[in-house]
Each structure stands twice: as structure tokens, then as C-alpha cells.
Image 1 (cartoon, rainbow, N blue to C red):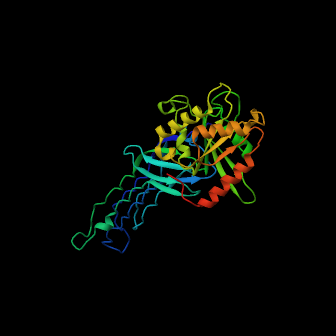
Image 2 (image 1 turned 45 degrees about the horizontal axis):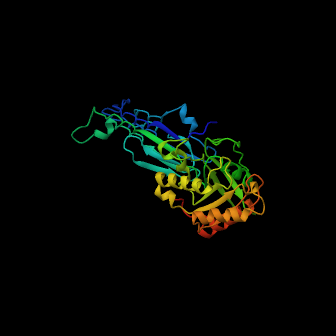
Image 3 (image 1 turned 90 degrees about the vertical axis):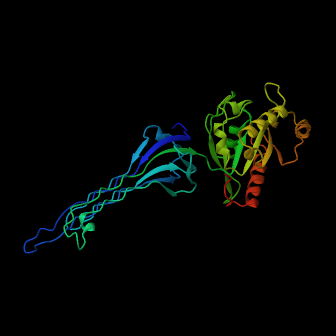
Length: 343
């Protein structure tokens, strides 16, 4: 199924049922009086997060959702049946915006969480409601009120603990394959990753974290070059970024320049994301002679003036990935696994 992370839909709550005019007509009961019942309330529309859904692709086919309207009242002071509420299933991590006003209505972060996005109309009043000492035979009733109608913009942001950033072919997809059961496509050409991938990384018994791999950035991504920065929003909930750098690019470019290009695009996209805690991961060290690995990696770190955590791995062979997983797990545990995701 195609990965879709944005959708626009219209939701319409059910109208309230109409009240009715009715009078009691029964043998031996003269002047029975009014007995018209109220209309039922219309159903509301709710969005419900479901862990079994991971894309907004279903909304490409169905874009309008209408809840059931309430039934009209009836004689003998019977209130009409209320309309059933409508639950629209969305993935966990869906942000909901009013398309017309831009207001954020909610953020569905937990499985089963529900958000009412359109309220059902109220049922109209039957003529029984209008009787009084001076109006003993009222012949008026009110119609039900219309249900709320809203145009919504849904935006999916994946929930992950760790996000991978880097140029195309830096080895992000290979790394997530090496560290988890995720199987994104891997090839020797740029942009083999066309949509985000999630993988659960095990770091021992009952210890794991979720890693997100997004399509690679290139210089000018903030202006739409390559795949742009549309997928970077999926990293805004992560607590830690792993910046992958190819230590021996096939085009002969400088790894330090590659790092700076990504850093500039992060700043242009979001200052908050640019200052998120980020670790340096020097990948593809297997391409270097064994006696040059330390000197080459140290030179890169020196040129970057890097003072944060740094790791040397080979995603293709898995070398160094276990120690990386343990370090990430320890960091997440020390900062609190239940810590709220960054907005």
C-alpha cells in the first residue's frame, strides 16, 4: 500500500430529528392534550487512533464521512431514536487541523484515543413542550438543528524514539535493516527510500526502541530539491537523531561537506529540530583499510569540531551496530522512556 501522510476530508455530523405535533386521541379521554415527542439527537463524528493502521491512504478513495441523523419524535410523548456516532479510523500519530481556520483540533498519540471533530445536531421539541395554562393545545414544534460540518486536514507524524538523517545513500536503510526487522528497499542509487520506514530495535530482554528512517536530503531540499523536506516532520517527535555520514563517498566528495549540507537543511526546515540532540554515526568504515579507520574517522570528527557522542559502524556487515543500539537504549532509559514526545 502506498504511504500517504496527509489527507483532506469532510465530516458531517447527523442532523437532529424534528419534534412533532400530536394530540392524545383515546376513547373516554376527552381533551387528551398534546403528546408530541421530541426528535432524537444526531450522531457525532469521532476520529479514533488504531495501531493496526499506518497510513492515510484509505482517505484517497473516501473523503466524506456522514453520521446518522436522529429520528423524528412520535405520538405518546415518544422521543425519536438518536443517530449512531461515526468512528473514523486513523493511524496513531495523526494531527487534526480545521482546514478552514487552521486551528489544531487534536493530536491522537495513543491506541484507541478518540477525538470528536463534529457534534451532532439536537433534536427538535414536540408540542408537549409548549403546553401551559394559557396554551393547552399548542400546535407548534421545532425542527432539529443541523449537525456540524467540518473540513479537516489530517497530518501523520510517525511516533519513534530515534530518527535517522543523512544524504541519500549514506546507509540509513541498510542500518535500520541491520538493527531491526524492518526491510526497506536498499540499492546502490540515490532515493531508494521514497517514504518513511519504522523499525523496532531490540537491545536485550524487554528493552527496545523505535527507529525511523526517512528519505535522504540533498542540498536545496528546503526549496524542494530532491524529495524536499516534507518527510522531516516525521522526525519532530523523536527524542534523538542519528546523523549518518559516509566516510568514503563514491563520488569523492568530502564527508565534512556532506554533514554541513544536511545541517543547513535542518536549520532551514526547523530550528527546533536542528538543535535536537544529535549523535554522529560514521558509516561504511568497512571500506577503509583496517589501519586507517581510526585516523580517517578522527580527522572527520576534528574537522567538524564534534564534541558529542560518535560511533563508527558498518551497516552492511553489522559491525558496531550492537554497541550503537546499547548506547541509544541507555540514553533513552536515562532520559525517561515515558517522557512526552517533542512537538
